[in-house]
Amino acid sequence: MGRYSKSKELHDRACGSIAGGVNSHLRAHQVPHPLFFCRAAGARVWDADGNEFLDYTLSQGPMILGHSPPAVVDRVSAAMRQGQLFAAQHEAEVTLAEKLCDSIPCAELVRLSLSGSEANHVALRLARAVTGRPLFLRFEGHYHGWLDDLAVSVSPTPDQHGPRENPARVAWSAGQRASALEDCVVLPWNDLDLVRRMLERRADDIAAIITEPVMCNRGCVPPEPGFLEGLRKLCDQYGALLIFDEIITGFRLARGGAQEFYGVTPDLATVGKAMANGFPISALTGRRKAMELLARGMVMHGGTGNANIMSVAAALATLEEIEKGGREFYRRLFARGQHLMDGLRAAAKSAGLSVLVQGPGPMFHMGFTPLRRVVDYRGTLRYDRAKYNRFCAAMLDRGVWLIGRGFWYVSAAHTDQDIEQTVAAAAEALKKL
Image (cartoon, rainbow, N blue to C red; front, side, top):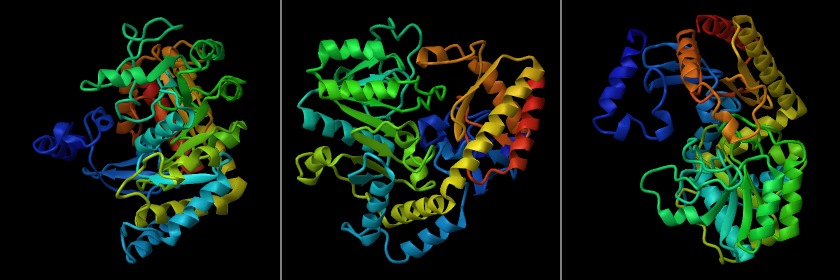
């Protein structure tokens, strides 16, 4: 524990004034305990004890350019000297909205917020207003935020989730309103036939289908061929809105996100994380016909910090850096991700361990399982999480910082040398296991 003693002291101190010593529940489960950091640059972070780590958490995804890129830091520093928050409009937010409309296939109008949870919340409110229907259809294991009506069946255990054809609606947290669970119906991901049967029975109740186009938060599960296209057709057939939660996939798979990558255009989409390289911002984007209800004030959306100077400046700088890179930006991001995935598979095979590595490349999942493929949330329950925690601890001791649930992010700041260093560390750690 000596290598992380300062972090341990700080966490013990934090527990005296911060509930659990962390300000987000998802930070509470780091190994060996919540770490404290003091500096970050490029693909590396330094903790309070002076340890240096190659970073594949990327702050849970936002740092697509890497940490502290000068283009973003300089732009924000200059912008904030002009003010921080006007409680009114400024030109840069219009420029950003125009960029989003130019990049994202479904975006004809946008609204800015601060977090993915907020953006998804207003997306569902808007869908109800457009259709006059009360419910939305969501999928097991998908994460759309921590608010009461969104945090349903995010991580149900086998004794909670019920039959596959009719899953239970499971609250994620104590204190959630029981009535919030009644706002949705839940189905397994990647089963188009079950979606069709549900809409045949309950189309008059279902305002929207909301989905991560890649089930990122649990296993980085890609859509089966034809699944997203099938959702689009069913929504058209039954008059429901299709909502893509692209808080993770937006600007990570392509400038136009997963909808560009997979060629399926939703009615509404939310983006965040990579949009501003670490600054708090999100956007609801969508077709004019739906978004007009926001424009006319029929659907309420507010937020004191929305379109603040710093976050908008960061988003503009980030998107401009991506645009400068053009196709080469994404070619390199995918290539480095694939290089890392291939290296991890080879290292696991050499160590004689059953490991599944899957995902598109800019983000992917690694887990210990005999399965050769995972297609839905219930498949992710076959991962050996205890073994992966031991792997994370071994990687940390070798200078690589990972997300404990198996999710890896790659940034534009990671180099081929970084990837080789990581694969070598993984080979040692896997052999130790």
